[in-house]
Image (cartoon, rainbow, N blue to C red; front, side, top):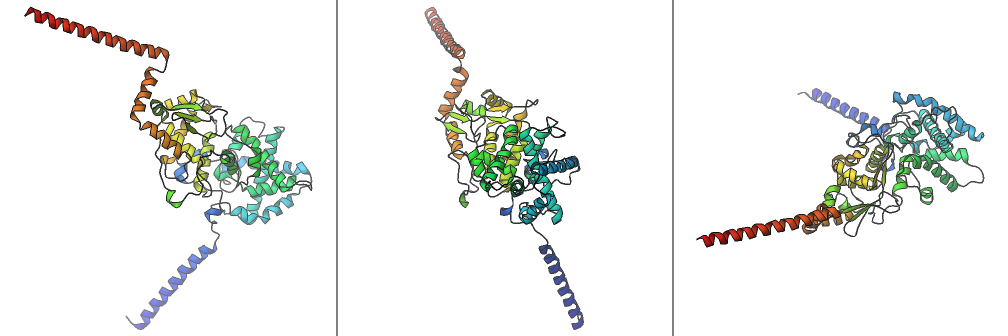
Length: 450
């Protein structure tokens, strides 16, 4: 190979390297998603959505950028504009221009809330934040007032409930800072403080949540003080803000992150082991499940409604995607996944008023509870009920206790069953005695004959 050919080849290689480097640099110069620790609104991973795609997809209204191109939801866009107009008319002093300017100042912060790159120009993104945010606020006002005059949403019995459900989908969230910003501009006057404004917004949000979901656990003191990331986070904070006393640390040591716990048996199997199930007195937070006196499982009632499955799945997805969150809802779902293995388990919890099914023509509405988690993964850290499971498993491994419990359940549970058992034992002993006597007499008779 001549020197000139070698020189040309080297030059070509240099040009290729520069071209590749330039291509990579071009990609780096493009907008990339922020670090996951800064994000709060996520696309649900396929592993979690494969069991029920519909649970993560809005049915009536699209909020934010992830579902804005869904043509089936375009019908609500005109209603959004109508709601925006009505919201501006509430004060008569707030100008649309001031709302746009306020959102423009926090535009980058809003973008950074989304874990995916939002492929919208700055002006279109700000427009979406203003319209969607004002729609949510006006919807909350109308839900509180129960207004239905010339309103296609509240003229129906089902649409408000569907919109509330859509507002609690992980992929259908708006940054909380947008709602706070717009709400403050619309309601603030010289005599109000920021803390008071935040309390008003929290109270306004709580009205549809507590109406449509009876598991919503609202404490004015706790919820007013909290800072949320979006509406779904607000709902979750209402549930985990007052957890059981044995709640594990949300930041466990690295050595315990993948520590597994041993699942407990199903309801019917635990009944055979002498474990009883009782509704917790006074209701309260459904997460506060306790195992007391070595045999009593006390569970606050949980109400299963039309959209409960979708809510649970989105809360679980949020906990799996946001590293700043614990696994309280996931822990509860995992516990139910252990307890409910068959229709008999569900039926028993219903007879004990621990499961309460509302608004359903589907007799198997609660069946989703046994399949909330993919492959019943037990490797997540911070399991809420590890001590409870350990105590329950001790009972199940005690063979003598299990045998006595089964004897009591199947033979001594009712007075009639006890009488029948005693009658059967006495009859068996009598027949055995008669048989023995005849055997002896027969033997003596044959002996005398000899």
